[in-house]
Image 1 (cartoon, rainbow, N blue to C red):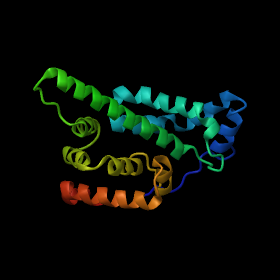
Image 2 (tube, rainbow, N blue to C red):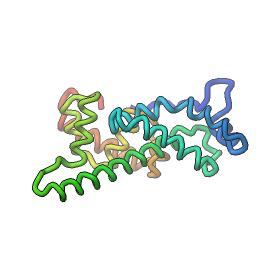
Image 3 (cartoon, rainbow, N blue to C red):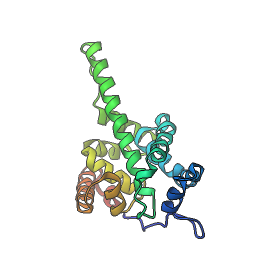
Image 4 (cartoon, helix red, strand yellow):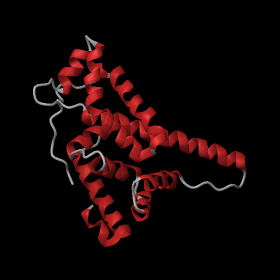
Amino acid sequence: MTAPPRDSAPPGEDTDAQVIEASRRDPDRFGAVFDRYFAAIHRFVHLRLGESAADDLAAETFLRAFRSRDRFDLTCRSARPWLYGIAANLVAEHHRAEARRYRALARSAGTAEIASHDERVVQRVSAAVMQPRLAAGLARLSAGDRDVLLLVACAQLSYEEVAEALGIPQGTVGSRLNRARRKLRKVIGPAGEAL
């Protein structure tokens, strides 16, 4: 399931690191990074949060990347893992804020019971692109396992890129992915063998 490493730039164009370094002197150059990755980042956020949040959070990903481009490690040719890491953090922030809003609503509504945050996220994902059994399996995963699985499956990042994006060791990526696959296979059954 690990995607082959991708070059960060089309043949004959500057690498992401070269573009980001140049953008430190000429900010307009950062547009090339946006052009290369916006659609993929938008798709990742859309899969995690739905259409309503995708535009804003994908744009925020690039705004944060632009503002922190002086801290980008220029020894990394590709900005892809860095951008997915920013996007994953924004998704997590969105989840926390949403959970706080629902907890506040629950307190003010008295006894009204609100579904857990994970259930709401999985319901959105399943309604948009996934079968109900897969959605139920995703809901049972820990946030860390789910992040790794979705970065590999949806964003097609390599283990190394996921490790960089989430700031965890590569071995942790492998163990989280294997654990997520095992749990999903139990829920999905024979149809999930390709996971």
